[in-house]
Image (cartoon, rainbow, N blue to C red; front, top):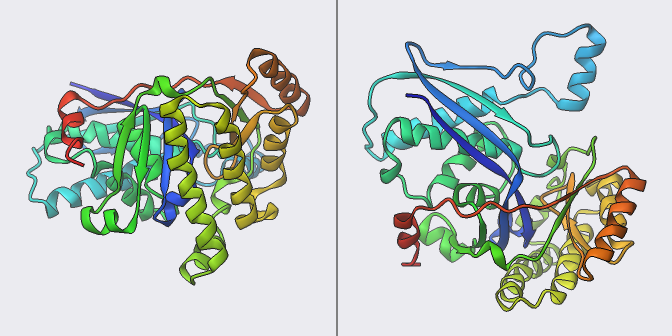
Length: 351
């Protein structure tokens, strides 16, 4: 029988990008956008290209070049191939026996490209879930380990990222994460704490139709952090602390404090990475939100912004007008509940 799974876009709510730097993060799954992967048993193992996202037939050379300029060179086929490899090697290393049989993998996605909403990892996450069910090994690969497999698949392709996105896409819902060195060294992964999605206030997503490439944001900061740059290290530590503060604020439902925390998160990122790395269009999205008094920060590393209007519907109307005038899309955010089974949830209590 065919197996199909969805994985949703994610919003890095607070603490990003400190997850890449042994920090902390607070993120949630975004129901507005998702990727789906279908696995069907077949005689040969086939990775099926998507008719739109893996396009290889063009009307003209102009069409080809325009496509590469706007969409890049890669679709989802490489992602599906990479997770198959990483999954197989992990099972070999852990002596997990896999049943014989081939399959065809296909995918679809409506996550806007280059919006920093983790479209690539959503495809990989959905595919991993299909493999776990096809081979009936979900009970043999702990939920805490699955984000590592997704990240390793993306590393195969040279994608630079942290665990935050993959954790929340595996867990679903709202998750607080601690990636401190002690946890990473001792456990091989962070400590992940699912939270009630109803703790979140109404939030909004802002994005552009033609955003800049979010992959450029991490360019120089990583090396400076590795070199022991005091400014980068202290700033990253402060960003990580904002995730912890945000968790407390949500638990207490003291939403007014979110304004300062969200804005500070973005301001610290801007100081570390600089305007050139962030991109003028990305900065403008934040400034448009702030022009009406809303709090705003990147959802990831650029391309989309999460905004909070502490003053309610009147302020939301102002934000709608400001976004429309600036040519940005505004959507109310819907959050996906947790995906964890009762058994998986109980296994986390030990931490």
